[in-house]
Structure formats: structure tokens, C-alpha cells
Length: 123
Image 1 (cartoon, rainbow, N blue to C red):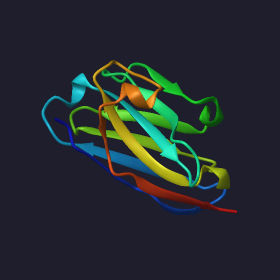
Image 2: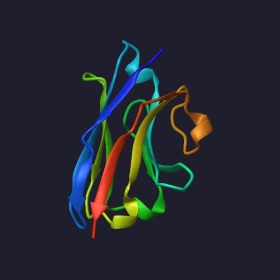
Image 3: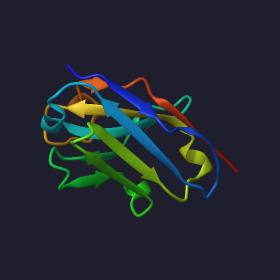
Image 4: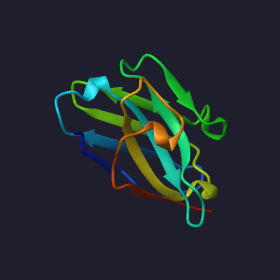
């Protein structure tokens, strides 16, 4: 069982940056692939980024490549999402999730989910 708690969301102007954190409970954090998803009002939840168990491999949706960076610190049981050059259309609730697989891009690849943190990007 893994419990995930996101933090770091907030209001930022277009072009600004935010760093999301997701702290996990449990002693087996390093066995999980981790991902970030987002859901905007009226839209389906979409994959944003994923990182493998060791942190050696990362994956991004095309729209955030070069602007977002996912990382993890297995010693601190935490995964991060650094978001730069944010756009108003990226306003959404951002969720972190843990997968039994090394990584995944689909919601169904993930077993554990956090409650989400709101990111609002003003124009």
C-alpha cells in the first residue's frame, strides 16, 4: 500500500514556473514506477510524465517536452515535476500516481493515486 500526497500547486502567470512534489508513504517507494497526470475541467485525465523505478528513464507527453522535468528521490520517497514556461491551457488538477510496472503512460497502468493539487495558469 502506498499513500501519495501532492503539494506545490498554485496560481502562476503564463510563462512562469512551478515545482510539484509528491511524497509517498511506505518503505518500498523504489519498487514503483511513478507518473504525473492532469485533468482540466470538462476533460479527461491525461498523461504528463513518467519516471522509471531507478529514475534512469523518463517519458513525457509531447506537449511538455523541453519544459517539464520529472525526477525522483528514492531516499526521500518523493517525486517531483518541475514545470517551466507554463501555459493557460495547462490549468488543471495535477495527480501523481504509482505503478507496479517500471513505467506507464496510461491511467490503468497505475494503482495508487494522490488527491491532486490545483495548478492555475493565468494569461
